[in-house]
Length: 227
Image (cartoon, rainbow, N blue to C red; front, top):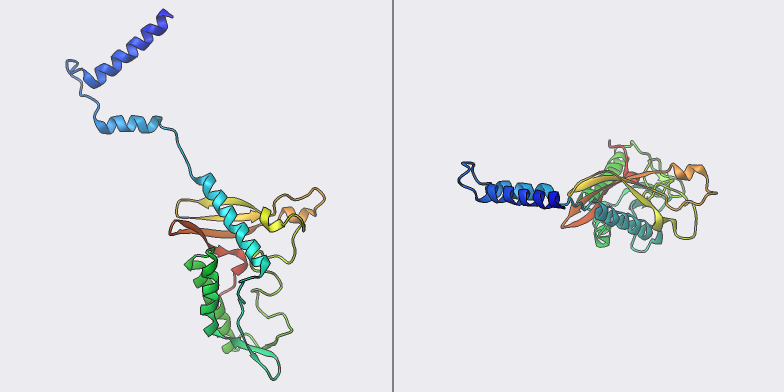
């Protein structure tokens, strides 16, 4: 007990000497040094957990929106020859309507919308240059975008019907800072009897912060070779 009192007294005396003793000949600790000490001893906080929760809510909301089809624009505004029902190109005048539909959701960044526009313009250019031949509206288009798989999830099916699998996807961080991040999601709450293939499925996406809110800037299902 006596030792404890002595230690406390010694510490108090040391602090008084540091901040108030001129006779020691040593300079006082200045304000910058004091703040540095306080900063070191302050608890470290991080918004990573909250950001991850916000981003997970964002991607789940996007997937539910895409599944519902309400307000989901036609990503391939074809020009169709009515005589033989063949696709001959793309109606680029409809891009603004698609852009407006995507903006209305609040899910997508300008970067994502610009990338989508580039995809459609590139496909239209390739059709005009005869690199993509006209094809029947009843055929699968001869390019890998929004054809045999849903670009929003890069899937044709879900691992289970109830509860809604899209509302339970799990987000995983690859890189994340205050301005943007690289992520991927996996199917969550997989039952024991599900095929092992579902457990290895991953879907990459990027996010960016616009006006203080997380937005989707890239989706794996919107990958397409430029030409």
